[in-house]
Image (cartoon, rainbow, N blue to C red):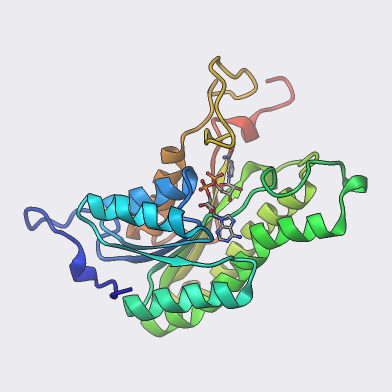
Length: 268
Ligand SMILES: NC(=O)c1ccc[n+]([C@@H]2O[C@H](COP(=O)([O-])OP(=O)(O)OC[C@H]3O[C@@H](n4cnc5c(N)ncnc54)[C@H](O)[C@@H]3O)[C@@H](O)[C@H]2O)c1
């Protein structure tokens, strides 16, 4: 990595109106082809220098190539978030090469791709641990790792991709629901402990979001008040907002992007 300086951003017309201008952002799970990639794209379009962290080097490289192809700056770091050493290494490389860090975004997570969907009594301990590790534990580690940098530079923010599954019952996804709910608790604690030092953490909780692993049906979806799946760009937009200075007074919150699913009553 050559270092990510904020002056590496291409400025057009001398006007700096981008919402994340000059911010240095580490996006863990920023490769992919779904929510992570959309966040990488949006952060870059809003002026951030992005460091894309991903377990798959080809995905991270592809995301970086896409950003650079549009004339902005980005860097790749690779590692598995389940390994404390690899996670720590990705974070320290991002901080060292950027000379600091303004925003941490955590995207890695899920259940369907990692363990079977079974009821509680059928769930194996190791599957519970896998889901917990991939949705909450690494986030807590990453937050703890960036806090000294944020404290040293007088502020910073974390945005974690959560899920409405953390707001309600999570049949056949208990560990996923518990872990996503835990993200909100973590955000509240970060807020309580560090808001006075300019450090914020918030969660963006998605409902059904159309991705390659969760494709949207062709027909309207009556279970969702909005009648459709959300898009990855709708999640990315919320993450950009919470990472921006426009959200400077928002911390410890969960922003729900679910087409109205979680606000339904018993009769509709
Ligand atoms: N798709 C939905 O309906 C939906 C709804 C709500 C929340 N979410 C949340 O969105 C996030 C994922 O979004 P997505 O499904 O669009 O995926 P994505 O396409 O954004 O991919 C995530 C990336 O994480 C990387 N990754 C996976 N395991 C890793 C590991 N151990 N270490 C490092 N990197 C790893 C993958 O290589 C991939 O590039 C999850 O947190 C999920 O819970 C998704």
